[in-house]
Length: 329
Image 1: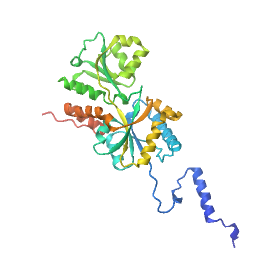
Image 2: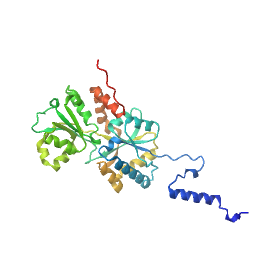
Image 3: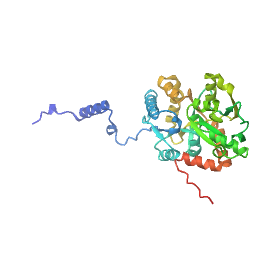
């Protein structure tokens, strides 16, 4: 007959088991009180486009380290496994299914997603004390390109980066306003490059006729090599546009939204936060009203109206769809 005094008390057994599970990092939900609703948790998705030019493994590891840090230091119930989507179709599914409640996205993604998803609070990145990106079309000082029409049959290099999200859209719209074909039909060849040097220097050395780049990147190139500034000149300059943003769904708990916005706004004050900002080439993240995106969204609306073919191709690409060639009449 077993000795009653040696039988382990069920409560003690449960406590010991729970301790082991905590040490092993196993889920402990089985010990929650019956009928207790799960606590709200924030799930964040990131567009792969905001990582253009960045090693995806580095991006995932940085985001994971960031979310773990935010969850711990700001007491935010946050899913620390990064969700990265490749197109708007995936993002829309995640949002409609309520698998995510906040999204770091390009402005082009937001332009499409806001038609089916309600976002009510926003964040944006700051560089050199401004969220705007300005695009410049450059050519050699000896070039015959003096106006947009002169791009006909020329070789154009376009920088690809998250900051360039609206650059090609702007150029297409400017061409349309001048009764010219869209970029892809006007120039002889379009080449893309992620590094500013590989965008600017071919024009400098006469290997390309023109390039499209952010004014910030061009200024950096000139600072590093003043001769670039003496050899190249600007043909056209865009207004300032905001190429990316962070949106919170209206259905997210207001308390969670507030805590998360505060945490992201304080990133520049922590080591992990500064490392993340450096990786994504920004200096600070700040809260902002939806109205700050109006100029950028208006550009996309204008693109859809003036350049319907180019806009349709853009939308298909953003949605992850292959555009089916139309039969020739």
